[in-house]
Amino acid sequence: MTTGAHDLAALLKTEPEIAGLVRDEEALQAETIRLIPSENYVSQAVLEASGTVLQNKYSEGYPGRRYYEGQQVIDQVESLAIARAQELFGVDHANVQPYSGSPANLAIYLALMKPGETVMGMALPMGGHLTHGWSVSATGTWFRAVQYGVRRDTGRIDMDEVRDVALRERPKIIFAGGTAIPRTIDFPAFASIAKEAGAVLVADIAHIAGLIAGGAHPSPVGHAEVISTTTHKTLRGPRGAMLMCDEVHAKAIDKAVFPGLQGGPHNQTTAAIAVALREALQPSFRGYAASIVTNAGALATALSERGFDLVSGGTDNHLILIDLTPQGVAGKPVAKALDRAGIVVNYNTVPYDTRKPFDPSGIRIGTPAVSSRGMGTAEMVRIAAWIDDVVAAVAKDDADALSATTERVRGEVGELTKAFPAPGL
Ligand code: DSN
Image 1 (cartoon, rainbow, N blue to C red):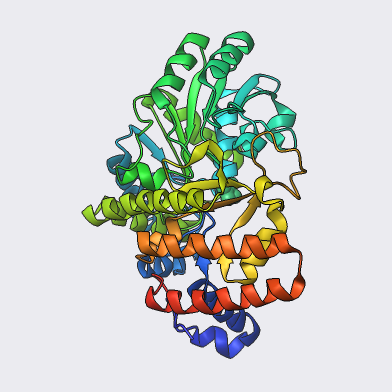
Image 2: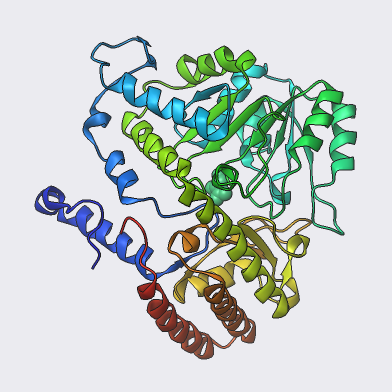
């Protein structure tokens, strides 16, 4: 059993059921290979900051101008987080209060648009995010959304289509970024299209913020006027978000977050963001960011060599999208079988998917969490082999054979994870 950031003594005494579940989750995270590209392991320092008395304090407003007294400490915490975000990303302005990525993106709409105006984003099934104007999201309901995608032949963003749609539809804002984009995002090209169309470019770097901070992906700073990010993916902080922007948008963004959308910020999260940003400012973070990309490249190569069809043919970043159509299996049964084998992934649509989103053709995998454990290219080759074994077993449609395979892989995964202890656990 792992010990976790806290000894859970009080919780064990008063609430053994929840304490037991926390321990179970710790064990699950320690003993499985976590390949969900938006997940990670935060450090013990981030965990500790997340669970502090800072959560007892209300602090609506911003440092130096609050609606509650007693801000002697909280103002310092938030100011530190802001200053570190500015230093790390080289931005004019940072707001560290959004509760998570979706509220952060909603604040951008509130700051820059009126209901019914046009937003342009990447379509969800092409790799975008719900809040970039997809129909089931409030953003696709309250605003007029137009979408771009990837080319069928290359699996890469079609910049000609982006330009055509932007010039035809004249959106107020254009989102660059998403949740299933395996390739480098060309922020200068997006910026030039946005300028031509008279739109504000918003970079949603939630997935790649840690890569950008660590020098492993080009930065949107200087290209996008507004930048949105969560703090818990490659950036390896607590669950939260930040908005960064040019000075010209600072007032509108702050006003949109509070009082426009949110009440009091979650101060314990702000503290943990400050801790994570300091970690990201250390030279070692560059090595971590580089290892994510190297590992994803090695995993992609090993999977390709085993005959897997990777959207866009591979990856430039932390993420790989596998179309399982050639294997004759769907994403969901594969994701479930891999889970039984101790390899945690999510099923995902692939561009131009002919199957439904709840039972799509692909799986999405990524290397942030395994890189945080210190795994390297040799381990990626082993992981590719296990994925191949499980997919082949699912394709055979023989429950006993599948069960034997997932059991064997689970044992081997257990051995590997013991050799690479997870941070924070
Ligand atoms: N849920 C996030 C992801 O997994 O990419 C996006 O919001």
